[in-house]
Length: 136
Image 1 (cartoon, rainbow, N blue to C red):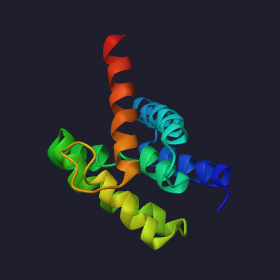
Image 2: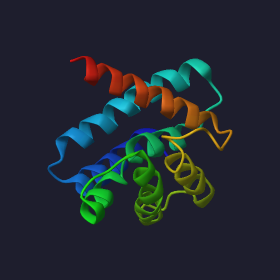
Image 3: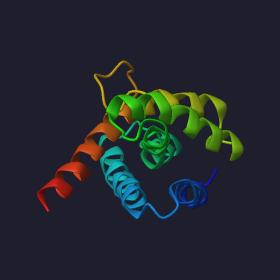
């Protein structure tokens, strides 16, 4: 699948999922931007996995807030993969890559349980974006 086309389709899904929660949408887009830069520098990453994991890493926020009235990293890791899997399956995303994206989402706030280079890229990009916004 062409990466620009994939990026457009998944960004549309992200916007549909979060609706008017522009803060979450902007965060995901910024994380994707930094993930692409980091992945290009280190090499060895799958661009489709980088795109999907970066855009969807915080999907668990919405159900956590709806169910529990708050969100945290643990809840994001627990609830996010199912949301991502639903969207990715609906988009015809490769099943093996979907499994990796869901593993990454389930582990992006805790000590790494997986050896995917895309997981480490996402963690670095997310930390950069969070640090930049905390300094503003």
